[in-house]
Image 1 (cartoon, rainbow, N blue to C red):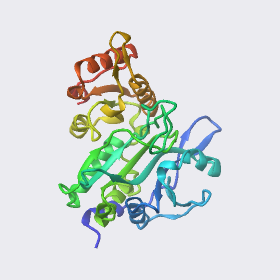
Image 2: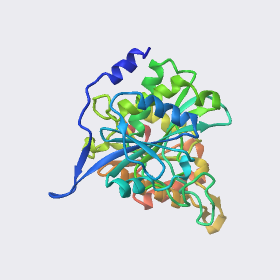
Image 3: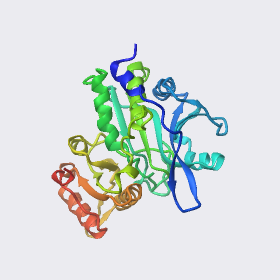
Image 4: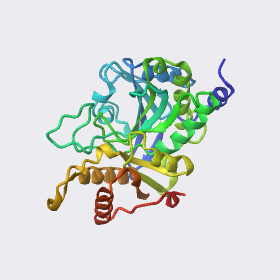
Length: 339
């Protein structure tokens, strides 16, 4: 039996099957959201199967050997490869169908040494890597995808869904720092179930993620959650620097406010080398610049504010970062500035 929340989320009438953004009097092209799942990953195909069991889906065109399914303006792709190696899915879809990809959501598993069960959301990129380095998990050195504007609102929605399905406190609901690929130009996020095979296969976790996508994209007949286009370009965006992989200081702000979320560059991705009189080396400046530029691109008209986990830095690191942010005209916000 579906839960009362499940019935509530899937019980609305069907809306129109597409959305369009106007780019001129004679130019109107369909804008779609890609949801991407791989059969190799139970934490990916599980939520995808639960989502496809909900009303309104019908088969769409194949993209090479990938099956697709259509529901309103959403296109769910199923493939048999590792998602972090599926570069340029947005451009490949556009070339095959003529539909412009507005944003991309990958369903995936999360792994962690702690093995703690978790439901996570994060942006992607490896902006800290040097050109001669080989990314260990997809992407390309010095690159980051524009962050999906839905991340902050969806994290707060995921918390509500997880609580209503009695997944918390067993499962932690959290953001992760920016990491891995694939290379893509559209605003992108990963939505993940962690952290071991036992949890990747959990049907209640899969159902929670499916409901997140269903309600978050407005497939339930409601208003889509976290759609920046509907926000008239107004709002503050948190651009996080510092802290560990689960960015607790940034998480605290995001969960207590209605702030939007951009890139989250952890301390391990801000590579800083104290070279004495020669200055501070490392790729930290490049990582900051790329993270800011693509976050600004994802939120046109928005106010992007850097938020530092100040206690995670040594004083010389914090001073160098603050000085560089000032040089780049990137404003810094305190937690109270995001309220």
